[in-house]
Image (cartoon, rainbow, N blue to C red; front, top):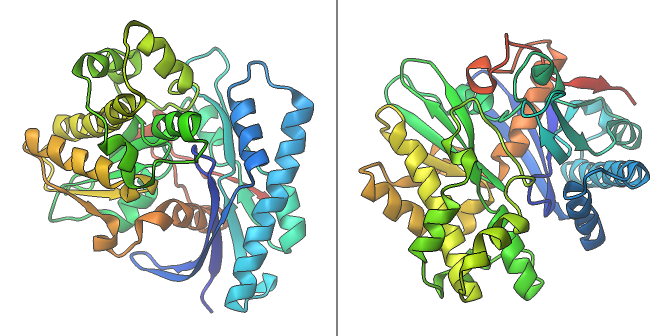
Length: 369
């Protein structure tokens, strides 16, 4: 019988819980079903508040950990019900959890904290849950991020062409897949996180739908140049980042010497994401194909600016991962379903060439119902 796994993902943008049910072979994925539930606004506000707090209030963190566990379990149970599946038909659930802080190697004691109580998910669903995917890699001196390159390598790699896979979530990351079977990758910088935050501040809406507001503004080259001086962009891989580095305070501090219309700021922030992605691709070995996944795919204006910047660097035009057989919305959730499978079978999924860890490791901790 085929093994069925559930993957749960709540990204840096903290806008929704994405869930998938899938079965895997070495080079093929059978996607059985999907479910996406918006996070309640009060939960999203609390996530943002804790992410921006230093130090964190432990009682608030523990309460939110439990609340997210219940929400993740609810989405999972609704997905199972829609597919007519019972808990004993699921081998395991892979839950990435909600990142609250990511400080891997920039401090004396590196860590990356994801919440969404895996024990509650296990008890509520009756399924084994694999979670806490980052800490083993960090214990080995790695960043614990990005984690998706291992999945990209397995299902998007080619022995004929050199590919770049770009995931545009809250943070944008890149996986470089040369045809010689090697792999590298890192967090590029802001994806949607600055765009969402700036739009939320002005309209109290979660995101700039299709980039329509940004498209009404003008890109300010001086502001863009100053944004690009952020030290993170100068770092050499392995590297990873999060909303601690790129947040509204980052925008406001950089804006002090400018008097710009809000829509011009949004247009320039969009250009920041587009140009940093294009530069990352142009610095790599010759790239034949570029594929994009994540929520950024839905931002029409961002994709137009990415295309323009890639052309300026004489790089291939970006295509959706749907051309490779996987809808861009579900790539990350599928990654954690697959990582659950690898953990249950005690197989490594970490890539030291990406994270900088001393060696490969089996990632994730198993929680039983």
